[in-house]
Every structure is written in structure tokens, then in C-alpha cells.
Image (cartoon, rainbow, N blue to C red; front, side, top):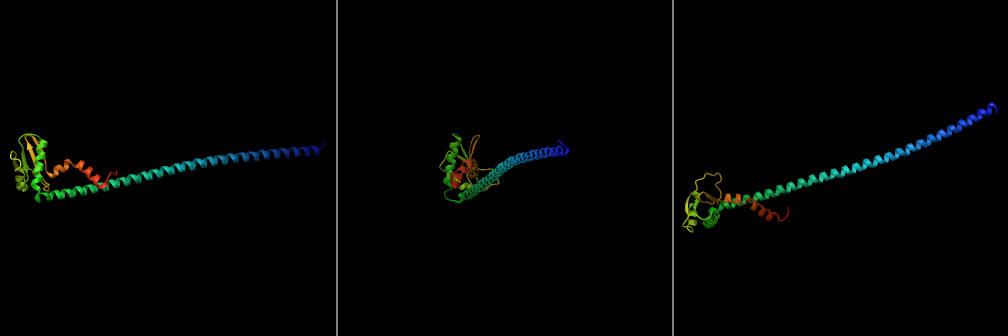
Length: 198
């Protein structure tokens, strides 16, 4: 074998080795590209899934805040409506002492107060401006004594009486009765105004 043949064979072997290396490099590049694309697809899926999950969570938080704010506004509006009802009732009660039925109302308050306190020697305390009505009401209770109510109060509206028996006391003034019955009256007022809705 001559030098030329050896060189030709070496060139052929080198070309074959170069082709094999190029093919191996191309195969490796294709594998790396496939793996890169798969990794990119997986990353894309994770990112979009996380993004969707975060978007849904944000949407839920926004809706929850909106519902909470709406419930707060509804509650505030209802409370304002109930407060207006109580203010109207207080205004109507403050006019009651000027009406002819006022002695009858005081008579009912005296009877109820005596029942609450129980048996004993009762005394009715009345406001100075209610003296005539209180005396008319007391005509039905000859065994009950009466006296002027000696309390200084900032709230001169309304009316009513106070019944005492020894150390016991039943405040039957309209303002005190409204305060005692406020919870029950609030529920009833809400039921009338708003029905069974929460």
C-alpha cells in the first residue's frame, strides 16, 4: 500500500469519524432541544396552573370582601331603619301625656307594676306635669299612695310612673320600659320591617 492509499484511507476514516461525530452532535443537540422543549412545556404548565390558581384565589378574596361590605351596608341600613322607628316611637310616646287616654295608660302601668313587684304597700311616684292624670288613674287603686317623683332627669319627654314597695321599685316610665324591652322590640321591629331575611 502506497502513501497515497494510506492518505486516502486516513481521509476516508477521518471523514467517517467526522460524519459520526457530526451525527452524534446532531443527535445530542436534538435530544437537548427535545428535553429543553419538554422542560419549557412543563414550566409553562406549572406557571399557567399557578397563575390560574392565584387568579381564582384573588377573585374569591375580592368577592368575599364585596359580600362582606354588602352585608355591612345592609346591616347599617337596617340599624338606621330600626333607629328611626325607635325615634318615631319615642316622639309618639312623648305626645301621649297630652291625650285623653293618658290616665287609662297610667292605670294599666300601675296594675302591671304592682304585679311585677308583688304584694305589699305600694306607692306611685309621678312627674309633676302628670299629677292630674296620675290622680285620675289612682282612683282605681284606693290602697295605693302617691307622691311626686323627685328625680332630676335630662330626658323630660315621655311619661309614665314609678311604683315602689319597700326596697322594690318598678320603673314604668316610657323611657325605662323601652330600654328594658329594647332587645325584644328590636327583633319585632326588624321582623316587621324586613321579614325573615337576614
